[in-house]
Image 1 (tube, rainbow, N blue to C red):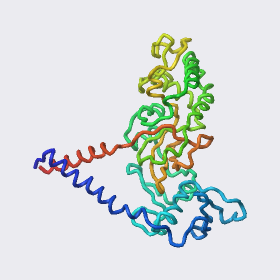
Image 2: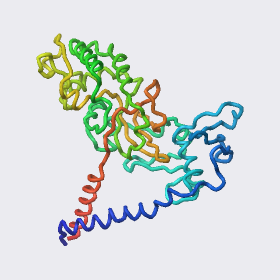
Image 3: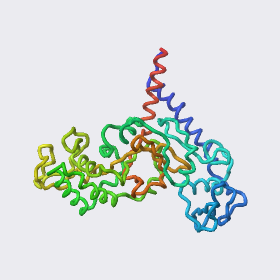
Image 4: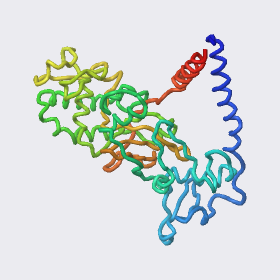
Length: 362
């Protein structure tokens, strides 16, 4: 049996897009409705769980732990607030699918390529805006682990910046750009001293970290570059991304760099290593940016629509809700994002699978 492209298009349309539209249409009303009967902002909620009491004030959810009721009200992290919104503000508490209800708990979505993880046992931490270690891996680094899950690219975390569709490392101000160029020139003269620049690069990058709430709408499978405050690799990441190479400038070309040129306009190259030259940012620096992140992860889950970033640190898989991300010691923060597997690629992959299946029956 043979099929034409027209027939294949019809199969895909009827079996993918029509079903997706029907699902969206059938479930739309489940997410909206009238408020929980009897509830009004300011009411003290005591029966939501065994952990605390809650109230809504000024458009924000506040809480007190039940063992510290004499203490002040504290602001509830975003994921916990969304959980209360789903029950008391978005309408029906009894809904189908993954919507929050008394039986199923918070709405949890998973990235399909991740190994199965029992997320529910980590929910107390995640809903409180804290990270949790949810698994282990034998992947030697964060970038290798992300590549295994997404099939995205090779190279270190900073080399993956070339995938970025949105980045904090473009359009860097003139003062910071010149400061980076000066440090690059010093490292190039003597790469053996590279680690002494780790803290100064870390502090520069910290000032470039954007507000994290702009990443509320990330999709499952999206790749995120992370600023890892405690990393010992800030200076190495900067120099390798600046040269577009591995092994502190001596390895293979893996980036669209170099992003620095001499005063005469000659782009950096390996022959310049060890030379006392003054470099300046070139057009690649301003048009493409460079990878100043030392860490990378993926959106592995969403809890009540809040992205949860999964990332590998020394063999432990961390799950960090967006509300836990901050550019401080012991935490991480998003500095660039890249779209995971796009709808177009999913359709192409599925179309190939359908085509292969049908043609195998011929």
